[in-house]
Image (cartoon, rainbow, N blue to C red; front, side, top):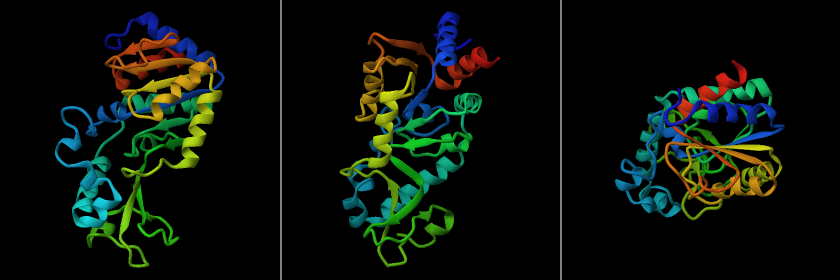
Length: 252
């Protein structure tokens, strides 16, 4: 049985998913943490070891590109060695059964795609590609081991490359953000999984959905600002434990 979550709540969540016309998922760092991805916040957060401006800003890349790229190489290597937990595969099952399940994520690790999940909207970019700091128009480059033979890696134009993650001081990718807002505005049900609900604008998505009459299921081991709002079904537990129970209840 899912930890801290009663059978009747699992059953209710299953009924909500089965009845919904359009279900949208929003995931945060807690979803990845179960697979071993270290978060930026919390006791083991990466920002406790380095200053954010030294590693995740244009200024940091220009000042010390070797340090930045050493760090991103380690992050990429760590992510490539991880496997999606059971919660990811449960989402993939829902998507396959219902044909559509857009997933909005703040994560950049690619674990959703690794689990076979399609239609992923990445609000904070991704660790799979890099692009030219000078935006010369050259195609994005895949982040493979060959890219790290000479640090910092450079574009064909000679400029330093930057990872295609959203750096501090940058806007979120507008196309992804607009689609996320449209989905929140039009969905019947939103699953909010492993997010602290403190990072804007992702934190606003379930609120937008609720204002339009959508139901919200929150899956998180801890309470968040969303937990106490009317219209939220709270399932206290980890995604890797709770989601498989819900999928079992919906599809058998």
